[in-house]
Amino acid sequence: VSEYVRAKVIEKGEPIETPPSLSYGFGNAENEVLKAKLLGGTFKNAKVLVQNIIDPNRMPLANIKVKVGDEILLKVDGTNDGIERVLINNYSRDGFLIYLTGILVIVLALVGRFQGIRTALALAISIVIVIQLLVPLIVKGYNALLVVTAISGVIAFSSLIIVTGFNRKTGSATIGILGGVIIASFIIIYADQKLHFTGISSSRTAILTQFTVSEKLDFRNILMAGIIMGLLGTAMDSAVVVASAVREIKNANPKLSTSQLITAGMSVGTDLLGTITNTLVFAYLGLRLILLMTFAGTSIFTGGKLEILSTETISAEMLRILAGSIGLVLTIPITAIISALWDKIFGFLGLIRS
Image: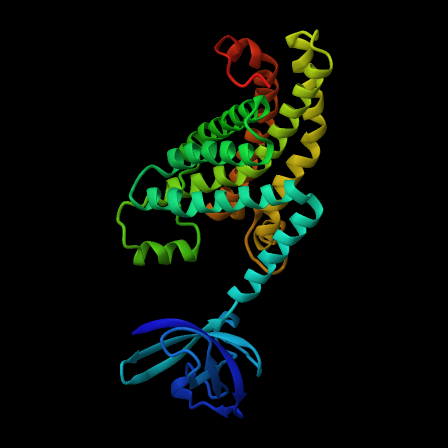
């Protein structure tokens, strides 16, 4: 059996200097022996010894500095006769993330009460759809951009039904979101022809191309699909607010004309533009702060702005921000128009009039 197991460090030996042959030719690496208790897996509760080499000449992510009480991730190889080999793999980070997820659900329930619980449920279902439907379809070789565009509609509709119910607001918001997503998709497809993306803009992606089990993966399309996914959350926010505003205004004054309802929806939407667009931009910049430092031309990096802007990584992030923002902005008028025309478009069929 070969498995990754969470373990808790219960004892730490004094580090000894590692010979140059084991430390990239340098003699200043340290080799410490850790005693750890396995917290799961086939050999749960077993106590094992594992070597941990700390070498300042390696990249920081390759050095795992631990203390007694820390949880680490071990690769354990063994047979029915017992454990044969144990290697330290990384810090164990999943436990804390699970606790933090629980705190998020509790906060949603305390602040939003029943609505907060429905929000948590909608989020959970969206994650399940991504993991169980979207990712397998892409792995099977389906066009990632088309898959993400279609799944975006499914996620938007299912989430809005859970949070706001099956009504006119849900229908018009979903159509508005899909409209913004589709427009952003066309922009991205056109931009790809101009920017000549390969989709392999990072070391992680390059490694994935070597070890992937599928030869059908189109990393260029996956890159573009990721841009669309980043738009979905903020587009849902703006579409729901605009659709809700139009519905409330129409309910308060049924005599308003279609053009007046569109104007009212646009008025609410334009108030959202500044904050929602900033949310999208800073969400991307926050994830890519190191790239922002690169473009700013700090002393950390060499190369002019023209050279930096022409790299695939930077230009892909710029496209992510620009195409996403355009799709987000256009979601507002599409939602306002659909909301105002809802009764005329769908009323004769008797669909979702509330």
